[in-house]
Length: 247
Image 1 (cartoon, rainbow, N blue to C red):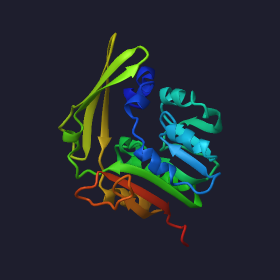
Image 2: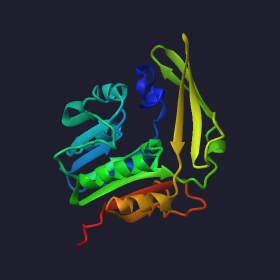
Image 3: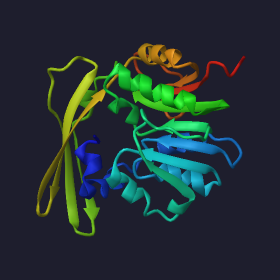
Image 4: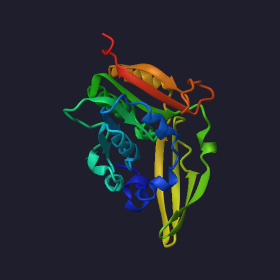
């Protein structure tokens, strides 16, 4: 089930206010070819990327397991130009095939087991067109994220300011996992959302992807398309194609 940050309607309504950065969205918007392209966005959340693709004339399907996030997505001015589906990335099925499949916002990291990762990659591989591409990102596990992530900020809403603060919680788990909580302070009380993310190595992701019939063709280390350097890059942005695409 989605974390409370995504499943609680009050928190879902705030999501875009706290995630206003556009460098990752700009990166993904440059990926499709000449419209109309068929695009699938797995873990689409509030649908910002789906709306932007639709505005450029692409045929878009947005998939997310959170009913609350999809409600926000369906309020957008271009919502009727997107097909919205409440589903997980691991179980999505469609007769359609896609030129581009994306999974953004580090949604890949909510897949906590190899079984979940393999299911998502297999679903994506099965829904690519012969020349289609799967693109998603995961944070580099070599970076000390628990030190970087101490953060708090204030959001202005019509009902008054909301303060959000992130704190690390369970530090006893295996090194590739981080658990943390967001505390949201409203004028009438507090809501806490707890999360765990997995920080897989690039090699492990590529191994499971190969087993799903996917071939890595590009790996960026930042949103400016720089190369991935394992010791310093914050991001691992993967571009996969079907391993059969070249045959």
